[in-house]
Amino acid sequence: MQQFDLIAHLYRQRAFSRATFGPGARTAGVLDHICKELKEIEAKPDDLSEWVDLILLALDGAWRRAESCGFSIEVVVAALADKQVRNELRDWPDWRTADPDKAIEHVRKS
Image 1 (cartoon, rainbow, N blue to C red):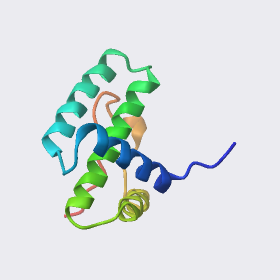
Image 2 (image 1 turned 45 degrees about the vertical axis):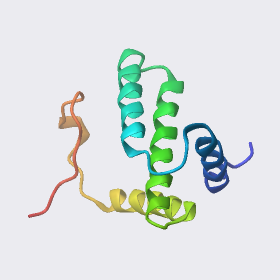
Image 3 (image 1 turned 60 degrees about the vertical axis):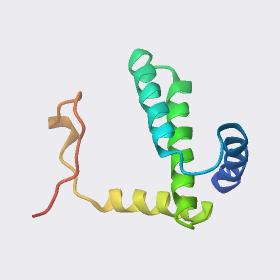
C-alpha cells in the first residue's frame, strides 16, 4: 500500500477548491457546509463517505484560514501533528465512566 502524502493532497485539494468554490477564506460557506455534513452523519453514521466529506471540509477551512493569514499548507500539516501530540499529553477521564453520547473533554487544570 502506498503511503498517503497529506501535503501533496492539500495542494491538490487547494487547486480543486479554488477553481470550484473560489478563493479566499470563505469561512461562513465552509461552516455552512460542515453543518449540513454533520446532519448527514447523524442520519447515516455508518457511511464512511460522510465522515470523509467532513474531514475534507475541515481541511479546506484550515488551509483557507492559514492562507489568509500568510501561512503555507505545510504549516497546516505541522499544526495537525502538533495538536495530536498536545492531545496525547493531556489528562483524560476514564472513557468507561463517561456518557457515550457526550463529548469526553480533557481534564482542565485550574
